[in-house]
Image 1 (cartoon, rainbow, N blue to C red):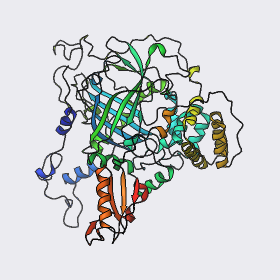
Image 2 (cartoon, one colour):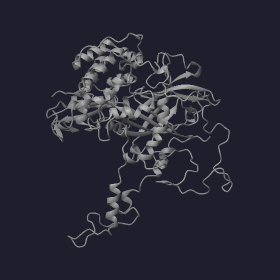
Image 3 (cartoon, rainbow, N blue to C red):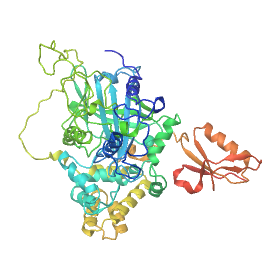
Image 4 (tube, one colour):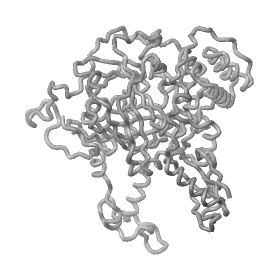
Length: 608
């Protein structure tokens, strides 16, 4: 198999760039040069517009049709290109080609996103974050479509429309935007206890990340690796940021929404432009198939995680994002992810939520991108060769030759079926039988043990933030019965948590929940243990300056901080320059009325 070049996707992307506007005159879509585009063709200076003005009609028509439906969820996002490289061959548990050779870099595109809000909402709302990675592998595209939390709200995909309808703005007034603090979500939560583990994560500081660059990612589901012999191994995917895992506090996030609603998007873009490329380590939790039932929860339950103390995360490679998109719409907005985009060596399990996603994503792209040919879009186009009998349809960009059916003799039998050399995708063989029933497995019925584990794993300050979050969210709920039901559910997790929340939202303490779960903890879940090396690199420092500032101290501070990789900005009451104590002028980066302290990691006040 030919070794894939690291810049293969970039070269392919460059082939689709529009002509340089500086290389010639303005034209119509048909290539006809245009000498005037400020006035329509009319009958006289004050007469009616003439419909024969094809430039006017084309320009307006294209404008009227340039929007596509936004994603129902994950509408607000930001993305970047980069590469992935394995540390060593993973052939012992998967035959996936991109996980075999440390010298081969696989191009990737990653999209980060919020879930609830529309495209125009703010970045720093309390919400789950999407973390979707498209690997352009030599065997075809592989999409690892995950979140920044390792679990999900529901166990079965049939409940996904219910959950999304509940968390989205309420239908009668379309309020609130980009927020979960409202009656319908908490009504759903209080009646659906399988949501509680995810709600504990959502009420924690994980829901307000400091940066996409400082955010974990998870595949959520249990997938299956398959090796060259056909042996399967259960796998959970983890992305760990090199910069450590860091979050905002609630008040910072709130003010950022007003001062800079694009805070996370801008942070990602600026870091890449500055050459400070974000990096994550890909790790896996591997479970031999014979150990499937050795846990006190079901591996197929997407509301559960495998504690790292039980199954350590094994690092297998790293990902670096080093290129921003050329065009947000063409790439970040039109990228189409699908959990069923897998390559040989990666397969599914019977997780009912995963099975639903395997249907839903493809269905979604058909309405968003106008038909079945969305894989022709540059951001979605694989670097592996594509040969099949799919034809025609909206936005077909290929000029096909030969026959369009199989088997055929007139076309020489082409494209031929792949040989039995292990290159083609073969589904994992497992016996499946049973009665047709609508019934969830009893092994999915423990709704409280893992939320309790999450609570027990938190530091004191994290617990305080969780209580404050519940108080804020439930304080926005107008229906007292919903508040009471939710607090009663929290009592099943931890009675102290429930009473602290009850006190803050003005309801009576609930009855103690049954003490039916062990007081276990997983230190790997606490932000206290995920800070990384606490490097100042890429952190932003505001230096407050005015006329008379100590010039020597200012210069030394700027040089020292910049040498360590910090981003230093001089802030003053006005733009332009301030005069230092040495009589020289010093440039002001931003005026104070345009910024706020919450947009910076530190503030320095030099002498003078």
